[in-house]
Length: 213
Length: 89
Image (cartoon, rainbow over all chains, first blue to last red; front, side, top):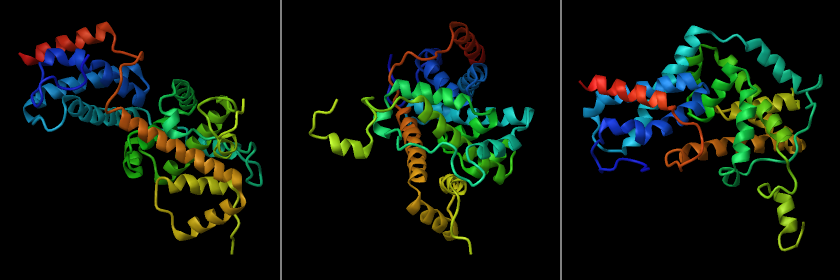
């Protein structure tokens, strides 16, 4: 299966689009929307829009990049639609959730360990992504979408407030809650010492050159 | 003048700092707290690492490798193909 336009700067036959890019676009949409039905719709809309805009494709980017650009717009539209239909309700719950991580004095109920996911190492780790996905699912819907839009789509806070129809202070609390909960969830579910992909910096320096098992 | 903040407040500043430019006062309060609280440092590092990971992932999505992950169902494919054929007329 090829990745990208077979002919350099021209479009392939729309008949082939679904076979060439359907799965890729679907996976992308699913990773953002977390709803298979909406993801399918968005992929369909993307192909239809691309068909109409065919003539405007100047071949400056690869075919897939072009389609992905259209897809991203459709994904944002889908999010907007989601919150037009059902406004956010879990705002107060976020305040409580944040508080639940701390005691009365503001100290963490559970102090975080020094573990962190080393980016270049974790990138290819399927186990990690599975855990991350399940942690993400534990967040309430709007909070999750807020986090996804911010961290995976690099949407500005202003734009997110518009899409979700929330105030800036709602946004700050959502992100705070999401980060606290994800941090906690990841640590809890990830098995640490001895795992080959996890290297705590201080530990690594000590075992370098030594035969530690 | 208040110069000591709780871990709860610190975690909030850490989070806000990822999405906005912090005013000097908040940055200062956080720095002071971090100088004394290593666990908040762990939270900050973990949060930043997650952001970096997700950004790397986003970049990687530009050139994906074949994976055994969700795909469009046969039915959806057929439906979309048929729809495109319709529109081409």
